[in-house]
Image 1 (cartoon, rainbow, N blue to C red):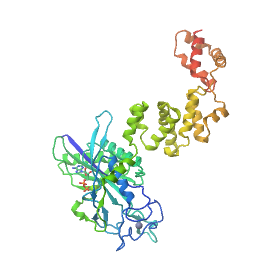
Image 2 (cartoon, rainbow, N blue to C red):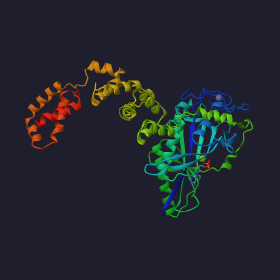
Image 3 (tube, protein in one colour):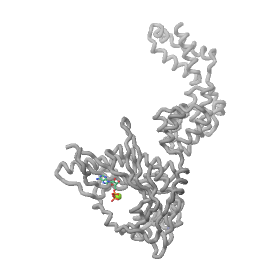
Image 4 (cartoon, rainbow, N blue to C red):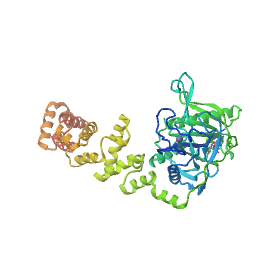
Length: 480
Ligand code: ADP
Ligand code: MG
Ligand code: ZN
């Protein structure tokens, strides 16, 4: 039998606010355990939560950027469960009436039509603390609780079960990641858990109307693992059904070492959590003015910017997509174009040398040692014929290393391109004299030898000879 996988993602997005969602404690990462706590986030009796307005603003922006409607009167609810890292014995979340509902994102896989993926809801909630085992936990080898993370703000973005393959799931996830980082809502660090994903996976016979029973795979912390975990889980469920078994609704954990998922616990249902409206927090009322103000504050989004790069700057689709991968890259590109004008050339350098340099050094575009202005200066030197495209790469490496301007590097190292026909002719004559055999071969019809001569001349000039001039002169001389 053929099976159709069905996938829905729940994504937790840790927000980049300075303070926690219901108290004024700092959210900075890595502080001494329990140093960033107060009666509210410690869950002490009588302490009252006060909603951080910034969290609401971030949630509205996330909602607008994912085509959600903003709920005019949304409610906080208590999600009750017991765990040592949850001091109150409940998590403040939203259940009925989350802040954002009914959104969507369009994904596009290579060679396929765009596909719309529904977003059921986005709600605000507080994170739990963290259990620490071993040394760090204090005297002895026991376990301790660090509540620095308790009460830090999260958005949970829940998709409809509209995804049909691991590739679609990853494409959706990447787009969501791009949007929340683009808007500055989240640092997007998956390894540290700032952007984490639970994947719900089921399979059904192709053509069936009713979805199969799903398993929820918890906290998969890279795009690659999301793909692997989903693929493993699809196959596991198919094998199970083919062997006459049934899939049970449960929570599973993905183990990147084995590439497998394993059962963690049977899945809770909503009623297990005994949700009820939090009596300590009033309903959150968001009027249309607030929504419109937020909408007007939204920056141009990746998709719009990509379209503009294609329409106004004439970039091919691929380039426009790569150059809008992050807001930082898009800003860098536009600054480069403002300073140089040739969008295609600026784009090529960013996608080539700059990306390579950043990757090699593990840097983000914000830390790029070559500024867009300096890149433009370098390109101008190529345009003027002062240096060749090849030498430009050498100059670029030196700019990267020393931070010097391209002009001063070219001057200091004597890298000015030689276009002077006399000088180049001299080199050609020497090379032809030293390689009489190859000259004969060329004249005998073996045109491939031409490349050999170009190479020799470039080498003898240390790459400085103007390649166009070299080509012209060589053709003339070799033809005799
Ligand atoms: P919970 O909060 O208990 O995990 P939800 O109803 O909020 O449950 O659904 C969670 C996720 O599971 C959503 O992303 C939804 O799209 C997805 N989902 C629901 N049913 C299925 C199914 N049969 N197969 C795959 N995913 C599903
Ligand atoms: Mg869930
Ligand atoms: Zn606090």
